[in-house]
Amino acid sequence: MSRLNDVMQWQTLSGEPVIVGDVTLTPQAQALTIRWRNGGFVWNRPVAVLVERLGQTERIPIVDVTRGAQFTLLGLGFFFSVVTIVVSIRRRRDCNE
Amino acid sequence: MSDELDKIVAMTERSQEQAAGVVEKLFDVTRPSSVYSEPVTAGDLTLITASEVSVGMGFGLGVGGGQGRGGPRQEMGEDEPELEGEGTGLGGGGGGGGASMARPVAVISVGPEGVQVEPVVDPTKIAIAFFTTLGSMFFMLSRMRRG
Image 1 (cartoon, rainbow over the protein chains, first blue to last red):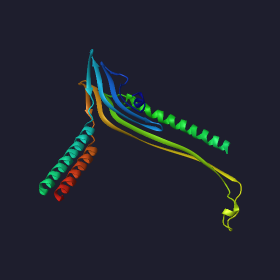
Image 2: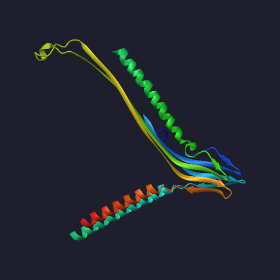
Image 3: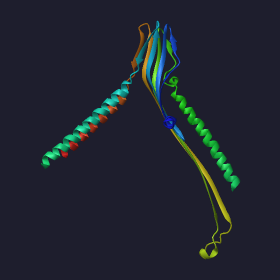
Image 4: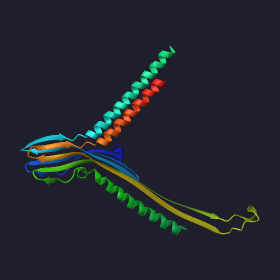
């Protein structure tokens, strides 16, 4: 497991709090790190911001609308392809019978 | 030969260490500060941009050498010049590459109305994904009709 952790890490980190007036913002980011002998890859994305005001803490998630739309369209295309393949197989089977 | 080889190996090791140092710097990107910008204040509003960042890097180094000697005369053609003595050769090389990408995801604004997170939408990427999906759907439909 530790060997896998040396190669790949998925961690959520909190950044330095930013104070704006009476509001304290703590940004949170999620990072995927992949290391190999002669190189590496890092993917870092914002996930949420913690808002502290008058002693109360609220977590506001950061939604990646562009990525969400891309994955929705990808899923739609994949679903349509599967349905098309299943329908064409059934049709062929019906024709043979 | 041995001295030369030692020199090349030492040079390669030094280059490898330097490249490894560059790769280690790559992992600084995992810090949240690389994703969130410094706050910018304009009037009542304070803005912080949140971006997605990805970086990849790789390198490779190699060293090799060989040794040879001239063959006996009877094994060679009459026209061939007589080869005598030993010959050695050494060589090394390396290369590397990398890519990085950053894309704004949202803008955090702090103002009199409180804290708001406004998403940044990239219509070009969505349009490309939409037309690719549409194209694949038409392709699958036409195949189904033909089949």
